Image (tube, rainbow, N blue to C red; front, side, top):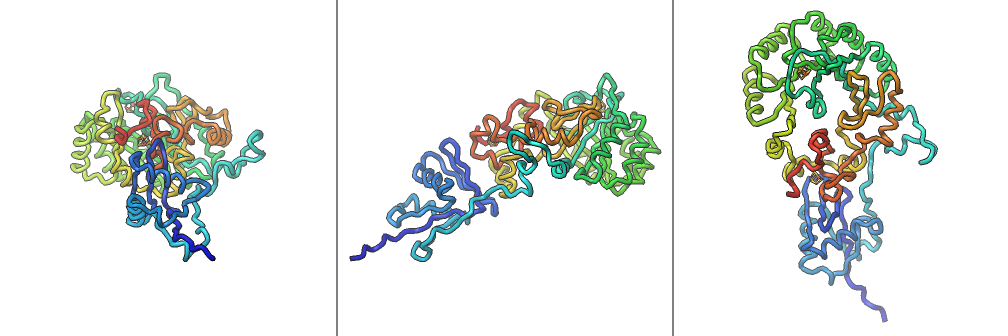
Length: 427
Ligand code: SF4
Ligand code: SF4
């Protein structure tokens, strides 16, 4: 006598669905259409099933018997279908377990490829390390006559000029050596900043030497320092293809000085100028919008500035909430990469006018210009650094938060504010 087989199904998740399980909460995020399903401890049966689905043994596919499909499970399957996150197939039409590859990191090269010789004897694979430097921000000098209140702290939050009392200056020979070292590699952009770069005595020779290079050069000036400098403007225009000017504006505004600076830019017929508005409050935001409208400014960016007393402004305007998180619609590669690297910091170095080199100026320096080989520093940062590979899965409270791979990477604001959760999600 043959026993009749019970009807059963393969319950599966699509490979483009990201699953995160933390402290009695689980999310299923569809990386193609951005839908987010959330389950908490009130749905124990579903949480258990999701744990099974997500395990390395089951790889997004489990077998369920027809009689197991109660109302809860039926609703769950319906949600999977509605969001195109998963489904069931009758095992009679598909007797073998379908192969459903769980998502794995698909970066061009994972960090392990950068080493040879095993864990104990890591050595840089030089050709590959050279691909890991895209942006250098170099502070040429610290000289400046202005007295902006944000001067000593803003540069730790975003690229902003900074004056230093000891007036340290980068030797042009050091810049030449740096350019020779990085020549023909992956360097794409050089941010050139001060102090007031107009007071850097080798500025014109530097602009002339940079003009023929294939990298983008962004010269940063505060609007209060944007004065007549015909030689600079002439050489800047000569490299127009790759030269950009970034003009920092902070509030309260010196209207006369701003108008004079703006006129200067118009007279010099400079293209590719971007205005960087430093914003500490809603009033600053309104002020910036007025200037943008009055001068018909097309290229601009707002940089929120944390001054120690404007947490409420940050909470309302900078902190991420659930809706904003979902709206960013990160793709699967973003999500997987965010578990390994800080994509906002990755491949970027800052060199202060003290010659100290940082992967992020909020963390300890990683070397010194003129003393250290830049690619040895990069290798060390990749393997032992505190910036490029710092992710939310390493910090409290994010490491136990179910959204940690969906959230944007840790920002400099978080170091400055001393908290890793610039969000209103778990409040
Ligand atoms: S212009 Fe720049 S360097 Fe000068 S004081 Fe202001 S923020 Fe500091
Ligand atoms: S910032 Fe941290 S705590 Fe907030 S939602 Fe993201 S991972 Fe969670």
